[in-house]
Length: 333
Image (tube, rainbow, N blue to C red):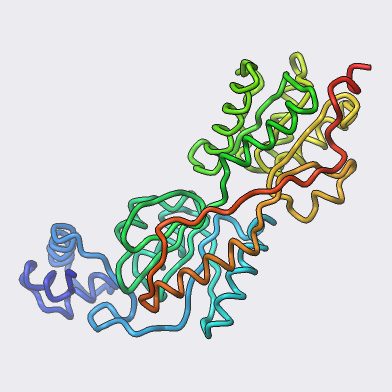
């Protein structure tokens, strides 16, 4: 591992000067600062936290990096992780990755300030995670699949979930099915869409590309997508790739007197707490988030203890049938 002493040697300065530059102290000349930064860049030096030049000591603290702490989807995941951490004597820090590579979360990963992290944030780049993961800093990812000796994947089976959701609508007689997607950069969104396509293909149904719209996994995105759908011929059913978007879609359809499920069936994904209290209650697909979080926390601690783990764990998804879907024959009658 490249140390601060290596940077100092290449730059021809003292280690204390390198420390001043890397910690943005103002009493270093610009010429010296540029020499140090050039040397650090040439050596691909990554600044660690307080233990950068010493053997890392265990902090008994693990981190959870989520995209946005205000999103209900993350609460059960974090609760499950917390239960595993507490049971093993670890503290937990939860941090938002809003701001991407400039966020505090990204800095915690880059500088390895914790014993290890669980990442549920698609805006943290793969490259950063692959570079940061090492024997003393294991990583569990829950929103994508990465392959590294020191990274473990704990994944919902999103492809199968997307297939099951679409198959549910097909079995109700629907053939005109729209798909409202999350971010194109999201692996879980991509897998749900692949499941949607597989079910449609098996049923011999062509996807109507005019009915595929982006909603960014946000309530406002679902609302706007529903408004766009209503500008043309409506499908008979809409598969929203998460419940947040489905909630926004419900609002838009109600504003335009589209009755759910009499005029249009809708289905969500995630089974967030609010979904059962909507009018009508939302048919959705449940990810056992608390169990998944507990598993992720358990696996990370196993890695910290040097115990053997699998490279990937997949968790099955279950249907939660409520009142937002009707049979196509009922809609047309």
